Length: 359
Image 1 (spheres, rainbow, N blue to C red):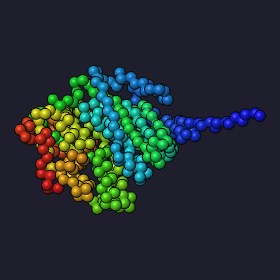
Image 2 (cartoon, rainbow, N blue to C red; image 1 turned 180 degrees about the vertical axis):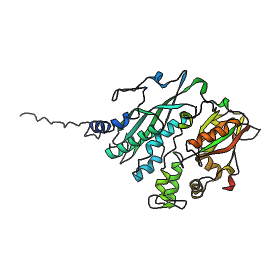
Image 3 (cartoon, rainbow, N blue to C red; image 1 turned 30 degrees about the horizontal axis):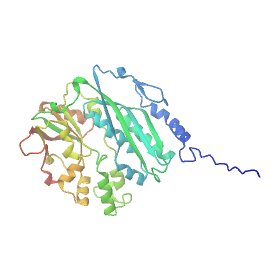
Image 4 (cartoon, rainbow, N blue to C red; image 1 turned 90 degrees about the horizontal axis):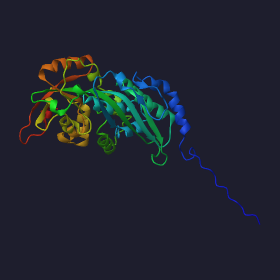
């Protein structure tokens, strides 16, 4: 009797849930938009294994390279829940390039990483297009990236994104903590709402209060629903440095992200100094007061978690403050003198926040 041979069915990569060809088509559709972000320093080898950059063409005399990587946290969950991806890529770029700005440098190149359970063309295109928007705003070339299809790891329509940016600064212009001095003024530059930190807390309070973020609106903002207000993109501040007058000297910059106004500022100055931040100089954005009330936060926890309306803090000599405020006005950034630097006294914190009760 002839033995029966059982044939084992072949399982292709596509049948396992990974469609390599599909992303190739998506990338080709967006090629023109991606190439529009390139500058003269990018050697066009689109589709190669790595990006090639000619730093000599950036015009630096004695450059130091800067790098930053970040994501957007659980703000992404709200974007997924509302299927609104128009701004999430801007957030991704902003979180990286603003950190480079904090050292006095400019970003020049950006790469993204997108990991999905299943490649959805409309979703991926929206995300990449918003990344392109962020790169255009920051004058940063989108030189590469990776999209990973990971079925079984990311369930349903969940995904994650991360970014990486490379920038540069002249050696004699890099901002380091030792430059900030006692008596320096501190200028605040307004944020565009929450930016990209504290969303795990926000999502928790939304759930606890059974808030419908699509149907409901804030009392202080009837133009948009709650979701649209929460998903406003992070401001990109690169023009602060890119268009800064040569004779305008800055001592330091703090990008207010996770850790809020308590943890971030002290990364920009020495341990012998204390920032005295005066909340009577501005009205805290009502969005943050709403969060404080709904989450029953004390002031310290609010300031430690959120930017409270301040996207950047800039440290500089008093004599240069008017020039900086005029520069920022020309860039259409709302800014004001929010505090000053003082010698740190015994038992005082590195950041002292005054007059917050008026809010």
